[in-house]
Length: 205
Length: 205
DNA sequence: GACAACGTAAACCAATCGGTTCAGTTTCGG
DNA sequence: CCGAAACTGAACCGATTGGTTTACGTTGTC
Image (cartoon, rainbow over all chains, first blue to last red; front, side, top):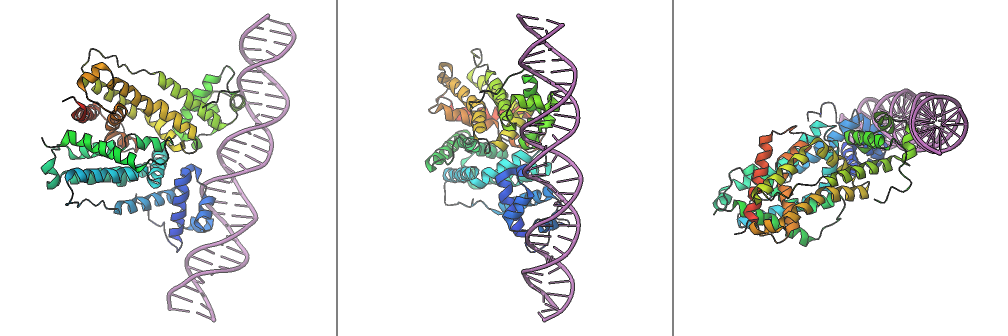
């Protein structure tokens, strides 16, 4: 995403991004009208179009901003005081909670929907979302503390398997509206089962 | 989905469904224009509107038809001549191949995109897609042949975990355009690793 | 071969879309 | 407190949308 050239200026830039983010997440790219975005952002359409050449670039700017923000959210993995099993469980709970959050769901939805129309968006989202998490987990799996308890050959694949196990049952149910707001106990259960399966495979014998 | 009331008639019904399916999968709901659908189906717009009251109902009809068709695709699980491990591997390969297929991807994309605007669509897709597969796998896990080799308490969750393991690495990469057409060897590898992790957890001790 | 039912093509409609223009107001640094 | 830059609001544009209508072919059937 090499944008940013000649794109931004003005003092209401953040307002525009915020409004656009809200509307895009709510309505999707095609569903969001520029007038609605301007209204929601408390800004005139002329101002909006003085920042961005068109709707697509605005959309990409929102996604970039959001992904950059997400990238800064560091996972607290220096959990040297926790056992490996508890650390994994914590990772899973964090992951699941994010998957099921309003923001996580909306973001996933709109990115899935538009990924083929905006190839660069697909890559940006993947890199700063799923990929980033997998790398983070893999990094932990490769740490001395974890290696003492686990035997992992392909740490990136193992990390991805763990992340996928976290999506069991609940993720798709929420995504397709079968369940609205899973109880904490359900989340704990899925996290628990994910860790159990993961450890069964990768715990050092 | 209680439609079908006063909805269908006429001899070109199938043409319309086929054309609509192609365009909707290609462009998404908002992106697909009715004129384009009519053109693609080789049918006049008037005919189209004599079958369906509006675009939404046409969309739902396409989804229903497609889901019903998918529901008839029986997984060949009477693999009494295969070991449990080989059966699981076969299931995984089938699943992964479907996840990565053009149709599977497009279908997933458009359903994710529109699930919140069409709640009934979300449920229909979930039931005849992910849910159906999980039930099918769970059913196998509960069969005597499988129970002899496996120790599964919650067969539905276990099935879902297996399905999720099949999505490791490749699914999101293809969905977001990072990879176009994964080589067969990669698919085999993911299937293999999924089965390994699954068996590590659920193989009878 | 006539009579319905079905299908067509194209014009047509109101609404909405992304995007532009412009005359006028607000903001704010020097 | 002035002047330039930023912002506004609303009118406006051409294109496209979902959907309707009309006047005319096609099909098939008893």
